[in-house]
Image (cartoon, rainbow, N blue to C red; front, top):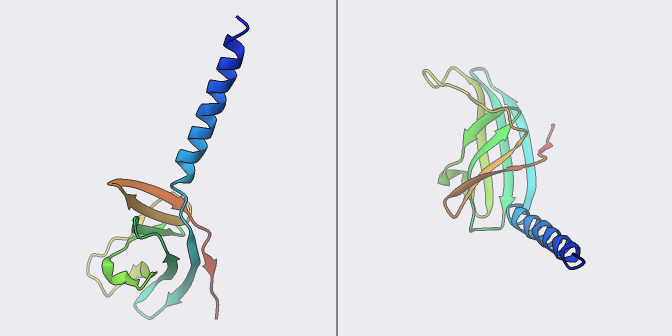
Length: 126
């Protein structure tokens, strides 16, 4: 009976360490994460920008203020992404804004798995 308590503590500690390392692998180093709102006569939205150094992951979409916008290869310039998140438009016929209840962040794909990372975007004002 004396051996079972240290073994249980060791197993619990091992699973805790394993869980921490497996979760921390999904945390990406995102830099220069900013957004700026715009309001033109026929369109409103946000321009979201961020820098990603890890080429093993692919950003799929960005969530800003409850609006989701897909990210395409055209949004990448070097290691920086710049995404136009449309909140309202009359330029695109039947355009539907995609909504998400998640906090601000980015959906990524790595090894055919999709995961979400919350991001604290900095608002740029003029």
